Length: 343
Ligand SMILES: Cc1ncc(COP(=O)(O)O)c(C=O)c1O
Image (cartoon, rainbow, N blue to C red; front, top):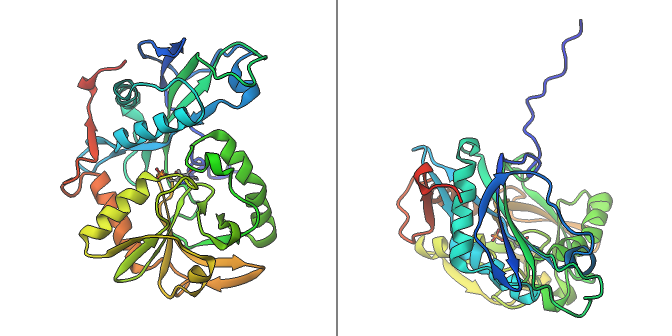
């Protein structure tokens, strides 16, 4: 009999459900207590607001198992705050901060056994859906909502791990609408899909760098940074893009490593002329080096086309902190043990 083909390749990011999820419901704008359940299909009324009017948003964060075997959530407070900000932009009931933090801890506790060792992590995906059963509510916010924290053991987001990425620079089609740039709403991702699929098919690009009118914002799922031995440059916080927790963490670490941090407008011209390194920052990608930019059909090599030394240094500093391998002077990591108890 022929030997079956090897099946050792890691499953794709986000395709493996962890055993449990944590659920809380809001009725008339107020959230009830959370409960831990097996990960299973959600029962949603077919008249639910989210299914018709797009009242859906989410978050994405990780719990890392350190080499000391301790599992630590990374900056759960910041992700909870951002979900609240998105909920307000979508006019959804805003979950209390303490509820969100309790649910993130409960989701980690409920799935402690499947948190993979490094370089893997447990990816947590809080999801907030408007559930008012009313198909006549196009101009009315949903006062009922379903909040679910899903979890998934993950490996590397980009297939090939450490290879330099290729970005297509898009100056005409925007990633999203100006009002939603800062929101982590599902609708933003389907809006970015068309240009991303086209860039992949036409140029083999990994991601699109959205820069409407030549003004650099971010890619479809990560923030964009320029760096060299002395400084790190990225767009200043405004309503046009998602305020990444990784971006903030990398800027803080860079400052502490003695780099100057410049938060200011960045133009496509500057990016194409930049002699140093470029990288994408995000929970999934961590800090991923950019090797090639495609603009107006022409390929431009960034630096020497490889993942640069500053990118590697900052990436290592962040991963070491997330994994508890170095002290955490910022209070970013939240150790989670079985004694925290399920929801
Ligand atoms: C559009 C977009 N920008 C930036 C980021 C990075 O945010 P964070 O570092 O908080 O994961 C993400 C999420 O990963 C994203 O979806």
